[in-house]
Every structure is written in C-alpha cells, then in structure tokens.
Image 1 (cartoon, rainbow, N blue to C red):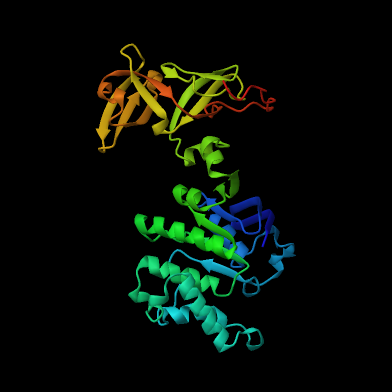
Image 2: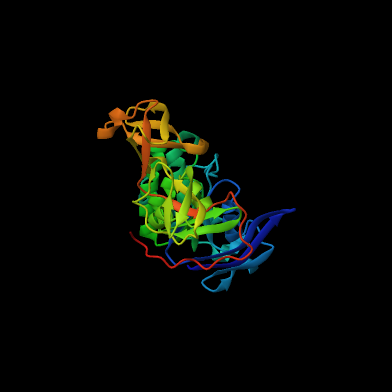
Length: 366
C-alpha cells in the first residue's frame, strides 16, 4: 500500500510537534524514521495508526482518506518496543488474538485461524515456542512473537516503534537481519521508528531524518551520510567536530588544515563552518603547525586524540593505533590536520543576510 502524507500538523497544547509534514512512501517500501527524541517520529507513527489525530493535513493510503477511518478499520500492524503481549496467553493464543476479535461475519473460522497461526509459527521460526507464555521467553523471542501478532491479520501497513530498543546489541543485530528478510518475504509497506543510525541504515530502503517536527532530509543512507542537507543533519550523523573556516571561490581554508580532499562547495565567500567526523581527521606530525595534541587515549584498536588549535579551536580525532604515522602522535606534538571528508555550511556565528544570495555555480569535484 502506498502512503501519502501532506501538510500534516500536530500540536499538544502550545507545543508544535509536527510542522506541515510532507512524505510519500511507496508500496512495499521499508522506510526508517530516524531522529533524536522529541523530533515527532512516534507521533507521526501514531497518526498513521489512528492512535492520534492531526490538527491539519491529509493522510491517504492507496488514495483513500485514512483520517476518516477509525484505527480498527485501518488494518494496521503495530509493533511496540515493549512487546505488548498478553502475559496470560500462550504464544499460540497471542498470535491468534487479532483474528478472533473481528465481528462474527468478518471473523475467520477456527480451522482457518489455527492454520494461519501454524503458518506464522513456522514462518517466524518460533514453532517450538507455541505453548510457552511471554514470561518464559527471552527478549528476542518476545519481539518475534510481537511481530507475529502484528502480521497475523495480514496488515496493509506495518508500523514498528523502536522495535529492538529493549534488546542488547548482539540480539538487535540478529533481529535486524531477520526483520529485513520478513519484510522482503511479505512485501509489506513498512515504516519503523528508531534513533539508531546503524539500525536505520542496515534495514531501510530509505531513511527519513526528522528534527523538531520537520523532515530534515530523506534519501539513501550513503547520500545522507556523505551529503547532509543541514548542520542539524551533519551533527546528528556524527559530524561532531565543528571548525571555523573561510570560503574563497568555493574552497575552504583554515590555519593548519589540509582541505585539498574536499570538493568545491556552492557556499558564499566568507566565514563558514566545517563539520567533520573524528574518523575523517588525519593528524600528521609537523612541529611548525598551529595544532597541538593536548590529550591521547587508546581503546586498543584506536587512538582518541584531543587537538587544540589557533583561537581556541578544539577537535577530536580517531586514528587506528597501528597506523604508520601513529607513533609520532605523542602528547604535546605539533600537527597539521588533513581532512579526508567533511561538509561546509555558512557560518552560524554571524547573522544571516536579509536576502538569500543565489548559490554559486561551481564544479562539483576538484
């Protein structure tokens, strides 16, 4: 089922939670809503499910107005972070529950329900758990049952809200691969909420980054990682080092910085901010350079270097401990910083002009 969201607005009291959201989800697509807490991800999911109602906007599924439908009529499968299983029911009965509650004229027969439950038990690889109760299951097993509970009614849309948030890292990795296989096998249209970048990028066909109730960027994981659309996205994607630079003819310049690896950017001349991930900074020993190693720690595989530069600038760099140049990176040593990748935006430390200038038309590569 395709989903069309237009102008969706939601506020709680005086707090705006969603600001005129626009989003299209294709039939059979698996979309991740990625963003920090409070960005509006779960509220959007609840509106699609019929558990919340917007103040304005449209929600259409295959062209039908879903805001005119009650939650029970939307045929939604919803998986929560904390399983939402009935503790007094066996796994088998939990899977069957959604098939037993429709009105009698719409309810499958007992034989059809039993067949559907058996099908799900084998499909989800939990047949050996059929007669156990939720308290007798591990967290990963409970989440498989919760997904089976949602799939039992053959939902038009599958929604998952932080489905693996309560599980440890190893189980989460296993279940992510398993969920991707389930999605591909069922062909469902799936939207899932997460604040975990690795989870979003591994699972989704498309990632939608949300912040403060707005869609900040939407696209393939590689595009968002390499080409963040704003300073908010850059920070959220791990570009935690922010360095002041000066733009000249599309090139960034900075004292003690080797920025030749960066392509030209359509950013106006003058002050700008360079956003870099610590792993994309290569410090190179240089006694005459204006940067200095102020701190050095190791986790065995990588060195974490604290760097101080001109005008009080600070940065952190992650360097493989066995890198050829790492032996010279001692505390107190002077270094220049080679920036392997980064994104430049006009400086946030000065007031924006009253009129936005036309973007420079510059070559995209060196």
